[in-house]
Image (cartoon, rainbow, N blue to C red; front, side, top):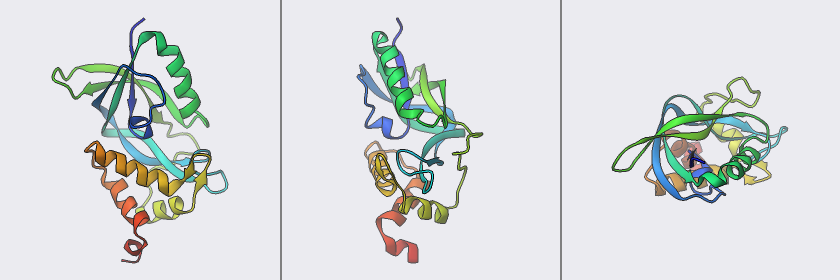
Length: 180
């Protein structure tokens, strides 16, 4: 059985939760990382939603591509579906990812795109609205501000700059920024 590639653009990049053979930085074209999903489970509730990342259409996204041994394919797909599909806000898809290696090869990778027709799709929200939503939301996986700040910290470690998340992080980390 052929090996499986999985593309992570958020917490999957540093906490994949599955066994893999190698992890390689990569770029997916045609979608971008966006804080565009109302979280009803992991970082909020239906009564007080949080915001989490999705891959939304357009642009490009730097992330990590994980190569999984073929014999683990079914196990890893089952794990990813349980983790990513709690409310079916993501569409499981196979997209071509350009690996950041000497050969710069393109590999087909499983990833999760936001379903723009789903009621949890938030779209593009102004920064002030993002701050209001994120700062008070808590879900099964913890506080929403922790999710954003942790994400930004890990993106920095991987030398990935996300201007939108950086701006939100500044507001969450330092309340004085909000007053300014």
